[in-house]
Length: 205
Image 1: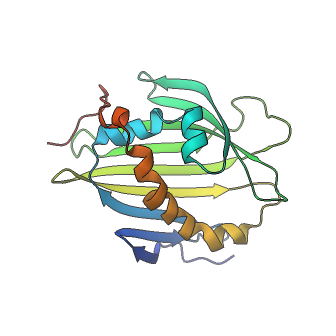
Image 2 (image 1 turned 180 degrees about the horizontal axis):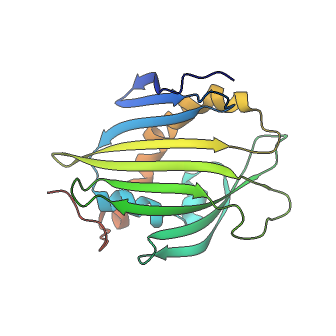
Image 3 (image 1 turned 90 degrees about the horizontal axis):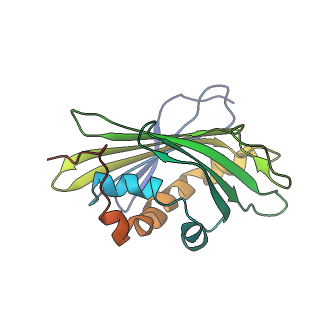
């Protein structure tokens, strides 16, 4: 269970850099991916708060079995709470990911940070699925000029139950790459997301 406690580059591919970090004493690695793309900040934020739908679950997220909005997005608290049910390969039970997202924008740099944290006890557990209790994702969107945004995606998760830690460590870098390179752009490539405007998000000049 040793670890360097430093981000180490796993690979760079198609403009995406994927890193891993192993904390001393921890079983699971943390993963981070960084890339740049032509997106607006509003479009990226909309990709989070407007995509918790059954249509998105069915069409764009291969493991998604169900999604339910527990607390709709609130401009007052800058949060929402959503319950996702994810299919797992046999013999593992489905997982429930009950997550609360919070958005903040730096008024000087215009960088946007979205923290996505487990809120496992917000609603009662459902039979037949394992509720994930350790889940932390962080998105950072930093304008870099010429209409481009640097996207940094960080994740630190534990699948819970009897799911082997070594499988997460072994496949985590590749799955992180597939998500940010293969799955994210199609999720954002929708007219309603490109047109989205929020009073609490200011685009960089």
